[in-house]
Amino acid sequence: MPYLIGFGALIVIIILWVISTQRSMVALDENINNAMSQIGVQLSSRWDALTSLLDLTKGYADYEYKTITETIKARRSITRDSSPEEVNAQENIISEAMGKIMAVAESYPDLKANSTYIKTMDSVNQYENMVRMSRLVYNDSVTKLNRSIRMFPASIIANSLGFKVRAYLEAESAKAGAPSMK
Image 1 (cartoon, rainbow, N blue to C red):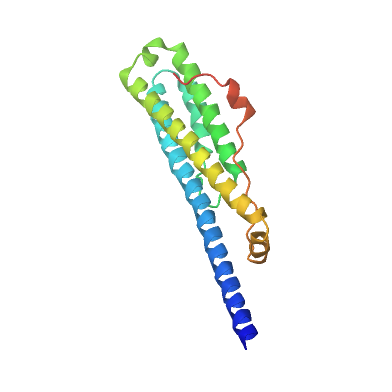
Image 2 (cartoon, rainbow, N blue to C red):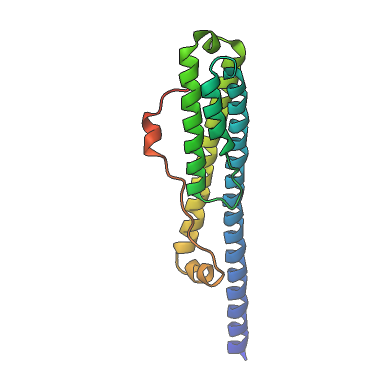
């Protein structure tokens, strides 16, 4: 009889551990989804700021305006289910549009000195910094989930419940040498 009570207590402890592990992994997974959603919101805000910058360039260089408009039309929103590759692709499109806008501003010093242009450029830079911080939060959340998934004995629960190792948002090597947005 004491063996039966001990065995029953062991089963209850294992069940509680499985439930606790599953809840922990769900919380970590949701943190990753939330971080990706935040990146999407901030990238969308950057697109809006870029569109404002584009409107400022309209009166200066009609050809560049049309070219940049085509780039901006290719924009796509990031959702909580987006992959790191999709985020990087959208950031590359933003960088391309920014490069074109910067080239127009360099050609027209009075545009570059315009107070609205300066304020809008500051907004773009602010959103870029927010995206950078959200990328850090995303990668930190991915690290926590991946570590939890890979550690024994939690790995048994993770595999049986369908939790998968998530990919990190990698820094683009081209961004290391990117020009300043100011």
